[in-house]
Length: 398
Length: 152
Image (tube, rainbow over all chains, first blue to last red):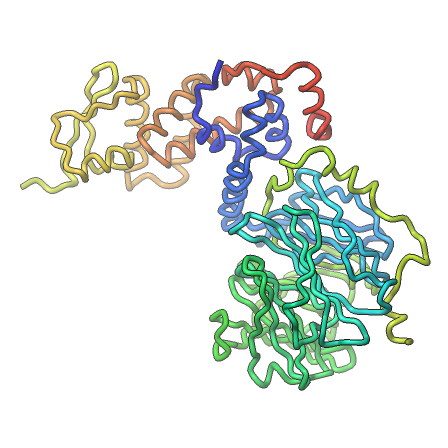
């Protein structure tokens, strides 16, 4: 007996369900299983949640509490209530994973904080599905010390998720090895022919916007610029920064973040200098003249608590982590400072482990079979073998 | 010449019952809106896939939503009462709203449907949606095992 409801209607109903009932519905019949694991359902469900996030945005907050990684989702609204604590099934060799980025409900994690473990995972915590990427071509022990940068994103043309990896070795700092992983093929492809004349800031975190991973990089003359990799066209391009933002300044750190729908640069004074931080926003994407200073916050206004800005909220306020591990929200003048009630420790490890990102629920990876379950991925992770890995410290000493 | 807002349409259900509805209200159904814009000059608009029971409900919903004096809170209260119908009627309204292309009603009815489904077992879903289980016992076990945590 065939179903009397058209597929489009079933999708319209199921997309509104929480994840567990959606998965239970895979058991209803073979046609429902096919429907739920279809690209049409996955993208309709995603778009429904993207629309929902305009009204009620979610934030991912990751912290290391007593050496254990904790992943939580919070509502990005005035009351900043916790929505859910996610179950984290993986163990890292380093203190905690580096979060490369989030995209369409997927997180990309890399175990490379100190030791380069060549462990990169793409994970959807909502459907408990994940994939451990194969070992990249450039690995520490075959080439000696190096620095790497990673980018993670989505190609809407081929409906594929990709990870780009740029590694620089001591020997040829301006001829990096570039590799691209695609979820659809499951392999790394060498794309080093896209030669780069820039060195991406070591451990620079990507800012993902308009389908491209953006990082801060330095050119041969010591000027900073924005380098980005378009996930669809698979090419690198650069954006020149205005002189005052491009100059090398050891008294402050530079980091790219997303401010509402624009790319922004956070200049944060280092401990010791401690004036404050400011946020410059590129109001018009790609237009150098459109960089505008939006935030100027002085640490003195907070009794000298050293703070690091982490994220710009939907309403334009900045989420900041204080010296004592509290999360606060402040406006562009640093005047309205609200304690969000999320606290932690003042230990360096805790403060360094804090990561905030926007998050959208999805069922991406649900269509993959049992091999992609978190339990299987977790079982493939390496256990500690000290001769297996290299570290940054070695690079400095050599 | 009468202004468009005052124009009244005659909607005819599949069982030949006629309903008078203001054009400004009826065009919330995009199917009807398209017919009107294409210059349909029939005395009554026949809605072959909507019976009088469903059409009466749809008109009740349309009139509430077209009323500019009703607040969002009032609409929400109305929705809460409106969806309290036997599940088969909920599905019937979804099909009718789909045929008439009435997005606001689709959203309310699909939300209501999903809300009821949240707590159902697999067997209940099959029963309420009139779906035949075409899995063998082993096949169903395998599907459950794939994502066992969702069934706990």
